[in-house]
Length: 485
Image (cartoon, rainbow, N blue to C red; front, side):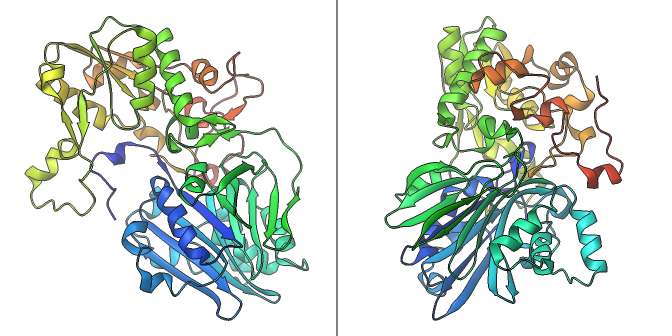
């Protein structure tokens, strides 16, 4: 399945969003709304599993957008009950375009003590080794997803109940995971010991909700309660509320810093900080670190907008919408000829010529991955009569792939892995190109003294090459870690 828009293949992709509710009538309807709010985390496919005491477990998995599938009354009536979980998916590079419906989560398993469903956001870095071991011991896998390993590990556990079996299984797993799961009566949420991927808790009436982001709690009218802590498991029932368990050895949190930069919606809250305000502050830091004489600051919509507002405010250069996004160009757009396909970015973005002409323009974007989109946008700006084009990037150079639940190209395809900043500037053909520093990014997210090099406060492996969990499967395939300095 193609990316949602022609130019979006030059952005890093969050692989999925997860959501669950317990203790509300027609829980699946609330999950559908939550998944709709998390659609930016995965547009390829979605799934919902619900449970009703009289009808048991029911599931629906579909390719495409939530709005195109889970708004059908006929479909939603097949998902009764006061307990449900859901998942939106964006596949990893290895299976892109080859996804089968059996790869779409949540996954369901029937155990001796009853059924359980599980949805996972993140990436298991020892999944190949686990899968090999489980198959040799007789497990039969239905999907190509690393998440299915968790169900098989649970099936082989000797623990007495499903939450304990999940604890047992997740202790074998390396990498990054936020999980929502359900039994016949319980909603379960877990974060890995480093807390790389997000998970939050909300209250809705007498019920409870778990979500990848707070914006999905807003859409169902739930009150944000708190983040699930790194290494915490919560077991929630309608009758007894939230029980907190700490199944893992405590470790220092290493939350993904790119959630602040790009993945999360700007109306979400992370660590009691507004994502929008953090991104605006990134722009402020960027203006302090990389000033330039210019006439206009323009965002590359939509992800560059808050940083561009901060850059303009701090620099005193006027802010303007120099690039306009066409909101109605979806994946169903027919591309009948090579000529149409080559229009690429122009189908999605158009330059505001009257504003741009004759101006020295600062373009603010969230990242540069392969650089293909940046070059096309620069050409559009120059074609519209801009005098100069200066790129300012609201993240450090992305020079390393992520193995914790983000779809990144191989290292050699990352522009910053093979070029210096000056070489990238020349490759893109712009008058200047500057990135925020890693310390500047840390200051923007609230770390006043910047990054602690001895013990980084976040996972920033895509910028620094310092991986908090060794990507053992990828190292087996030949991936080489950054040499210790």
